[in-house]
Length: 131
Image (cartoon, rainbow, N blue to C red; front, side, top):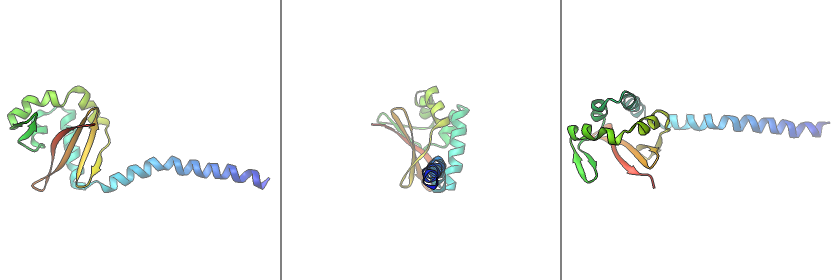
């Protein structure tokens, strides 16, 4: 009788431990997120959600390099719709951040959006190809 309870108890313990792992992993990333970056990220995501071109430009490293050209604020705002399509904006609403040394990144389809400090302030810095 005692032998039959051990496997059941072991299974229950394993299920409880494994069930809590995603939460522990998420807490681990949140613990590593710089609070200053987190404040930036909240503003950036809100500007994306509102489709606020000027707000996103304010949080972007300018000039912004796109296809080998440096875009000033007006140029960035003009290209905003091609950079932040409805699909990309939906992705921003649900995506998880990844920390890469001193920078952060998100993956939306074939694009990587990168964020880092510029003159001590967090900014959206570039878009790369997710290969």
